[in-house]
Length: 187
Image (tube, one colour):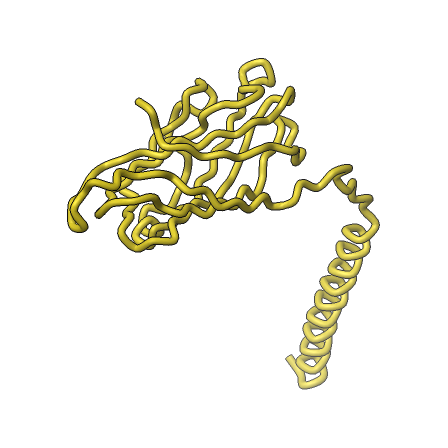
């Protein structure tokens, strides 16, 4: 093999590498153009985050270091639309409350406990979320208990709870309006 053949092979190899890079860059531009050309359907109605603060009463005739266990029920009212997915944040403004457990709801679509991060419960705050892939006929409509939050509470008096209802969706994945409410569990 002579010197001329070696330089020809290295030129061809360099040309191939250059062509590969040119083709990759061209492919990237085509993919970006295709992505930007896609028509995105904006939702007709975007539901805002619903933020509320709720006072949950507690007993007044209790010593300050007495520990008791309570539960809060979480309700979502989806009106006449079937509720297939939801997400919310629940937190207590007082430090003497500890979230100790999460239970599912009353409707079969949300009977299992919602998804949450157990480590986040240590800060009197939890983000809950659930979804159901059932058909619309199997989803709750109207007001339904979607979760129960179990608490360890120290001392007397009411507690101030902060809720942020971030999303609710129908079975086709579209955001929908819903009304979140919480109340002390009665059972």
